[in-house]
Length: 476
Image (cartoon, rainbow, N blue to C red):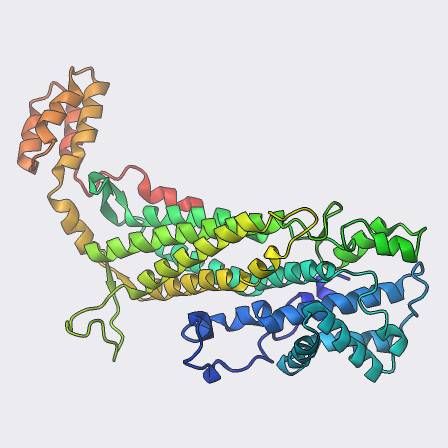
């Protein structure tokens, strides 16, 4: 079935409706994601928590049972009525933390997380009067057949319903700010030193363009799934039905979940697609980290003022402080997210022979990695929401840096064939302050055509911005 037919794989239900309120979060919780950042995590936790993972496992097991019941070729699983199908799908849409606790109770007894789901569903099917279907749950499956599909659905839904909307909102906020500031001339700095002027909006547009490229890759990512038994060979399947085209059936089932079928695997799906998604998320977070640092600098230069929040304290001793804490918070969380995402991207595709269990432990940290990435996005959005442009600060920054016009003067001199243009401007400007009067005196003495001389004399650091303001159209 498509995503739209099954709410478990899309957004047709409220994913947070059955979650415990974050108001009950305990101060004894170790992870800040589950306490300090609990409100930000709420939409993500609906997918990437232990509850979320169990829900997707339940969904995969039920969908496989429904697939078999609907198949003319798998004859030992009786067909189901429309009402019975609806009752089984209701186990997915109605799954809540009370139900997940029942699975965990089974797991405590048998010490196996996927088998616990099977036993839980067998009880549910017996209660629905379907014991003959209950014993067919998990037919021909190895645990990884369920897990790899559950993780793929979990990550796909979490990014689509929680991370991507937040990331797109951030880019929209930044795009609006870039357009507003597209003509605000500022002093550029290369190597931390004054350089040819630019505009604030153009510099922000650079980040918009970079972030959008990563968003496109993340939104269009391919999510792979395998469903081929203990070592990827359909051994048990062939034992049960020697003449069936199990590759065809496996592909049909995986694609019915909205995933791409992987035909060649060991016991586990190879996780290469996960590495691709995580590296794209890491690149997005790295670009965001760079933005955070630049915004911090622009605030320190005075190009932006920050709105003071009534009752907020910026320093325990300096009452005047309004600190760029949101950008600093985002920077820190970006760093944590990048470290985890890159580790997962490097670790998950590596497994000994037909499989080892190291990927299982690593996969449980996907939510932590994406969680820190989401916290970073929301922190940057809060920071952007508190900013107010101060063009006068940018003008003051440009007022006394006439040396940045040395580039323009030497280029015009070269165009008109004047000798040693670069060297003359180097002697005039390098390593010492340059005033407007000194520069104009130098220009007035050059053997240039009148229009070229007048152009240079009319030039100011504020007006020497090339086409910076118009390049912003590339992001609009």
